[in-house]
Amino acid sequence: MKIAAMPFSVRARLSAMMFLQFFIWGAWFVTLSTYLGRTLTFSGVEIGRAYSTMPWGAIVAPLIVGIIADRLFRAERVLAVLHLVGAALLWWAASVHTSNELFWILLAYALCYNPTLALVNAVAFYQMQEPEREFPSIRVFGTMGWIVAGLIVGFAAVEATSIPLQVAAATSLLLSVFALCLPATPPSGAGRKFSIRDALGLDALALLRERSFAVFIAASLLICIPLAFYYNFANLFLNEAGLGNAAGKMTLGQVSEFFFMLVMPFCFARLGVKWMLLVAMGAWALRYALFAFGNTSELVWMFYVAILLHGVCYDFFFVTGQIYVDKAAPPHLRASTQGFITLITYGVGMLIGAEISGRVVSAHTLAQGSSHEWTAVWLVPATMAIVVGILFLLCFRTDRVRSGVGNVNDAKQEALPPA
Image (cartoon, rainbow, N blue to C red; front, side, top):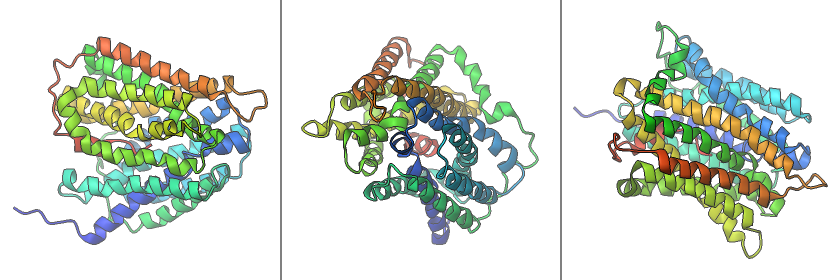
């Protein structure tokens, strides 16, 4: 029987929802370190702690979604309320000049924003007959939103101001209103008993008895520590180095994401899980080495290559990891295991990384306090990535996992947003 196509009006609304959802994140998150470091003169530790709020939000978000959105209220209404509160918090954050106050405001915001990542997916999936075919063409508008936000902020030359926070706040208010026009999405878990174990995917802990799965989890957690250096401090570094329109040029990373998702199935068929993950770890180390030794004159190409490596770093590790989890976990544990790996990487790993990266940057602040010894800073995450890669190479086995590429798109659609 032929499945009816999604009405254009529904597709258009879902696409706009994704665009606005990730425009908000892309507008303020990338350039926050430049604003805090150059304008408010926060230390590296203070910047790191400001960025640690999003990992805290990633840890708590499954509980908020599980208790409220899955059981009590329609998803689009919860989405509207969270973005309304989020808009007020971002606007407030734009006027704050002390690190402690900003931390608590951003933490409150992270607790509002992170649950919306699951909610926009819930709204979209509820309208789909064939998610594996329909979702990618809608989810891609999220990446477009992130890119457009970066280009606007970069070309407007407002990276060192509070304007990106205000732009994100205004967009959050717009999405709050727009969410009320989205298709009705009833709570999927109404009447079902809530379990913290289910919400956090803790049933996946049973799989840690398998050596290779335990090694994979440990490597995923550890590799997110050096990853935090890029997310939290790359924009500040590029601006201090004198690269014009840094925010706009950093969107090349999302462009590379498109490209490497296209070539990923071919690479997967030839390399398999282990070597795909190792290539990603090697790309992380190379990216930081290029940052460490590049400059804005004859070696500026190093900066561009480092940014373009984002597609390899993100797709080859996170998407391959989700494919591995899908094949390593028994069917009844696949969903909880995907949730668990998200908790470990974007929650715990990035939280530790935010703290460590902040301390490293603070330790390499030059006497005048307005610049940093970036070569020494970038060699720290480069070394971390190399060590994690070597340990993974020696300890990980894929003998019990069947290689394949059939779930590349499925894994991608469950991934967190572009970074």
